[in-house]
Image 1 (cartoon, rainbow, N blue to C red):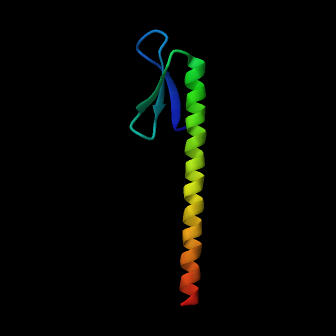
Image 2: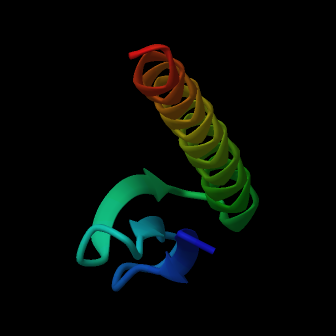
Length: 71
């Protein structure tokens, strides 16, 4: 998982941490439930972006191969 939750130093403080970005704090919540929901949403969005990037790379490679075979 890229996004995790951790208890903050202050009581009632929950953090969302981006493990792929040097453990940068990307969310701060007063509820563990909200922090977990935030982390889940960020994880899903990150996976969606990765999938779109892979699909674009596949399309680019396909176009490149078509041009090479046509030449």
